[in-house]
Length: 346
Ligand code: SF4
Ligand code: MG
Image 1 (cartoon, rainbow, N blue to C red):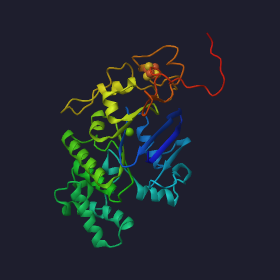
Image 2: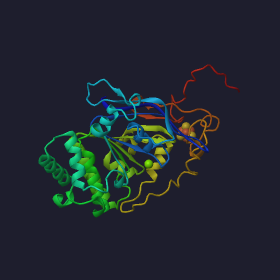
Image 3: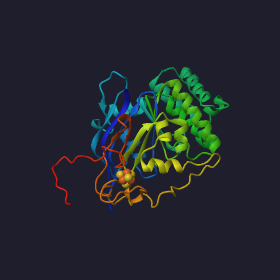
Image 4: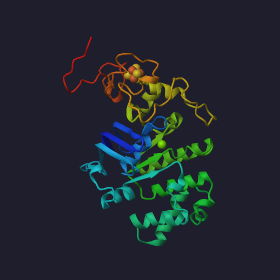
């Protein structure tokens, strides 16, 4: 299947004063072209760091230790390994400005407070699409209209602080889409909004996605949002993908105990705040500690002593279906064959 980005066996560490945080421990997944891939998990599971890695924007003291991030602008291109490009190289800057955009929970991260919304969108259009200022202005206003701004001419002349949270989020989406990116990385872009605005913005993103054909990597902790937005889902836990499947399989045929727990935490309609994962005991372990065996074993209701705390489960196709994979010893084929010969006692 064709992909825009394929992440292969990615390891990312943060070297802090108090120890090493292993943020990503062999993350692998691909983002299918023209589709929406949801990356879900609790905070601290590495979702955001994965998105930042793709753009080489991981802040210090983070360091990518190992892995590949392959990017294909067009289906027939030779893949480019993003990690082989210099962080500040021209090619990396081009990818950031032209091909892959990122939007965040807090729109002020992307919007510049000292320029009007219209000027910021025009700047992107002038850089990437047309040198004609009048035409750029026309396109900027058009994008603002398409993201549902009631009075796009007036919004174009407004500064970010003059807009409400929902309007700012729309402006940020307009700005991100103004370069018609191949891939949009959306990191919890609606989490700070009220439910009604959130629903409107998600609909809008889905519409624009279908229209432009942009691929989206949608980072969220909210399974309700996943149901509304995504074609495929990768569930992350402690820096690894533990289950990967088309969205229907995640909801109707979930396999990993962690996925099942996440599904139980979906808020009911009209209830914005997610319940904690009270169905599972414990919380995400201390980031400085290392867990042996399956990273979920201290919280898992299906924990099998002697296996789950000793052996890391390998990624295994569910019933031979390579579109649905899981890392859990409850499913056959999950015991990773050690690369070196080893003798087990007993
Ligand atoms: Fe639970 Fe064991 Fe599966 Fe890990 S491998 S999720 S501890 S059953
Ligand atoms: Mg995050």
